[in-house]
Length: 268
Image (tube, rainbow, N blue to C red):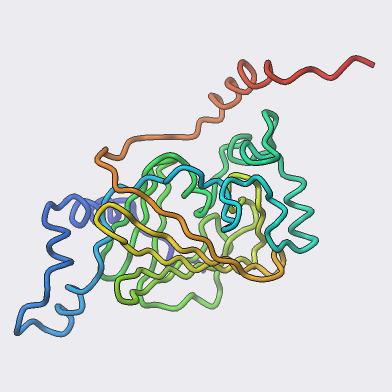
């Protein structure tokens, strides 16, 4: 079970070197097909080029399309279960932000989950190959694999990143993901999700410098109906760096900085 997710890191790095770092990558994917090419070659030439290092735009702390800053987190269509878990969250951002969070990322260095990753001020890149698409994130060096033109397995394991399959619709990369565990938040303000979460991501390059992501969320346990939100990313000229989560560093920062800013409870 879950064997399709197992891929060597060497494969990812080789794909990145071949597809992401090649100066001619954009020309290869955007050039019109030449006469006499096989149908497969012509189809490959029409694949949209989504390469580049992408950075987030300001203000993307919540996936609520009407409240991207997270100032009104309870206005998403939450079920009683979803509302209970949202109110239990103590996030570092949004209307309920606190210096004493129970954020699993800050408290334990747990993986943020794929959709919260899009809110961090670090870069990500998309590596396109014929059979897989890889999303490589600078923060935590997380990488996702998307199996192209395949169905989800019948026995999907629940994992931090879920099981992703994809296909192209014209100039858009469509990613369908199921099989999430329920240990992550959707965003920086603590919107929850359950293991029933089903997402559709649609990546489209609006122009050379702007990448658009349209994300649709469906989770009948946490939300009364599905909702769709958009976020834009800007092409970066900086190389990818190393950004890790160190629990010891986070604990020292909490002790020496954050705890000193929070008033102590009065003695009884």
